[in-house]
Image 1: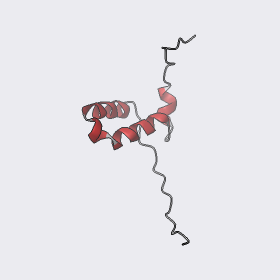
Image 2 (image 1 turned 180 degrees about the vertical axis):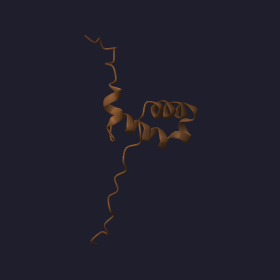
Image 3 (image 1 turned 45 degrees about the vertical axis):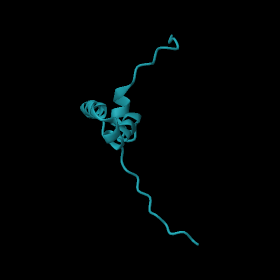
Image 4 (image 1 turned 120 degrees about the vertical axis):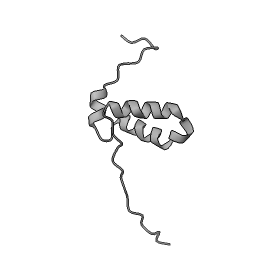
Length: 68
C-alpha cells in the first residue's frame, strides 16, 4: 500500500515504445525550454535519449482561412 509520500514506479517500457507517450511529451517540453532551464535540461534530455525516448510525432493541421 502506498503512503501519501510514495510514488508508484514508472513503467518506462510502456512509455518509450509509444510515440505519444508521457515521456515523449516530457522530452518535447524540455527541448522547448532548454535555453531557460540550462544544464539540467541537457542532463534530463540525455537521460531520456539513453532510455530510448523519442520526440512525439508532430501533428500538422492545415490552416484554413476564416470565412470573414
